[in-house]
Length: 159
Image (cartoon, rainbow, N blue to C red; front, top):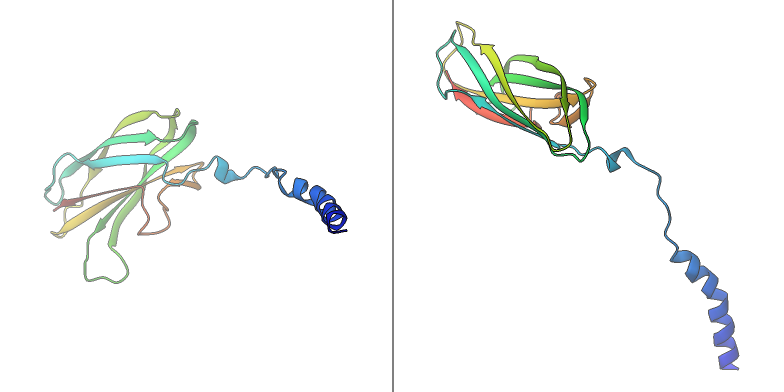
């Protein structure tokens, strides 16, 4: 009797077990393709120390770490004065789209050079250059351009 009961119970659960082990196909997600912080931004000034009013040249590279091309990208740069006493972040001096219509093949590294003019009355201190990479002027690939603390690239220089 026990064997009959055990057999009937196992036969009753076999279809359930077979169903439970069948892989469920998942719907595609944008996160299957979109990888945040996937463009490496390596950008710095030619020198470490500048005078107010002097021209700066930011040099470096952008590297697409994705397995697919990126089309119509933009490099956004923000210059801020570092204030370690601030609880709200750095004082933003200027923010601009330094380069538009950037196309990067999968794995491609592109060298860049961006001129920038420091204001003549700029106070002395430490400044930061934070960088962000967006596509279609709205999809944040590296850094979040609407925040002060999540960036794609970061460097400092002094005035």
